[in-house]
Image (tube, rainbow, N blue to C red):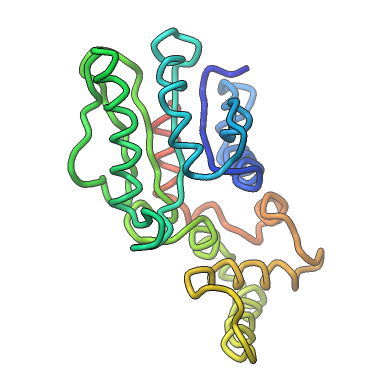
Amino acid sequence: MSKKILLVEGNDDRAFFKAFCKKLGLTDVDVPEIAIVTPKDRGSQRNGWTNLIDRLPTEIKRLRSGDIDKLAIVIDADFEPDNNGGVTSRRNLVAKKINDFLQEQNYGLYEISDQPNYKTGDIFKHSNGLPDIGLWIMPDHQNDGMIENFVEQMISTDAEQQSLLAHADLSINNLPAKLFKGIHESKARIYTWRAWQKEPGIRLPDALSENLLTIEAAANFSNWLVSVFK
């Protein structure tokens, strides 16, 4: 198992970020492999953002023991005020879980500012020598939302793909009834766009490899990943 860990919310996220890191060149033979894992991969009963946060003390123990030497976290912001959603709320939950545990262990705290490093992502430094911890809150470490909002920003500017995306919007707006919550409209948009590709319902990792999604449009996230794992 790699000693570089990227902890994500679920299986679809894991598959997507594996493809993203490969596309970015972070998993080339000259660069140590990054293990992209979910809470269940690390021993939780379930995946999801709450279980991800609950796993953090265990991962910090592994940082202390040297079992891992790099840790980064990707979590959705979701939306205020639902279920502790929003960039600030999610960031505060992560920060509190990390430093409350360390305070219990009397081992010094991570230096975490009151505000996120907007757009660039956070890299927390420790006062007593523990390795840095990276945090990125989807979609852009600035606005509320989720991974689907991030993916939408990556859709190719090719006229064909943009026309499909526009037609997906038109179709969603003209639905006789919207059974999904408004906060999940980005999910509906991305799933609809995926359904209309040459391979209907194309997986996001395959959309990346076929350049339907452009990694250049995710430069801030890419720069954060490289900074965490360099």
